[in-house]
Image (cartoon, rainbow, N blue to C red):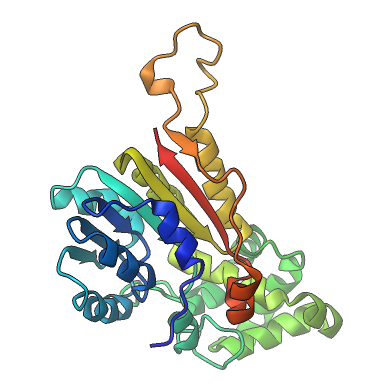
Length: 306
């Protein structure tokens, strides 16, 4: 299984691992990060999350060759707190999020890629009902415009949504390249080859299908609650929508609550919960981008529980 873990060295260093600590890999994927964590926490524990059952099965085989002090939860990371509490874990020493779609998911026939002809699926968890095909063929015109603009930040969202609705009246849209063709027709060849709106539209549909941004907000809130004092949270994002959520939540919990700011004595519950370790996001090296072009949009942020 060919998989490249983006900014692995920086992520692992950012966690500031202790050999007897309890750590969470919120995005197990194909065990790139988890393998490194497990090697370093011989007397500790690793808990990992992924809703992709194929990734869970593959990673379990990888991790059991390293140690047995781990547990995988085959569920979305927004269920992190409930899942950990169910096995008696209420506090941890570090949590890692490596967001986005893994290389194997892009390379499998799941409809994530706009470069091959595949069925419109885009589910990270194939147990879920909603697929990209449902979104494209069943969502209202207004909902399509909204998700294309909100989640894809695409300037031609209206034109693309309008043509999708027209085309699906003639024939159901079944495959990725059918959708790409409609996007090109909607915006014209000049805009299409200059701006590549298909990237934005596929991103928007994927986020909608997997509820990625809502899940991320919920999981970050849970993660902050779960961290021990001096525990680290490390997040690698791959587009501006994810990074904005991380930046805003880190900012919210690293400042005094504005309601009580200026009071001579501030109650503990209103004091900052986080200290920002990386004031500006860390970026992949030139060498890493040359080795793996998918890493070029990555940003890594680190915060520590006070």
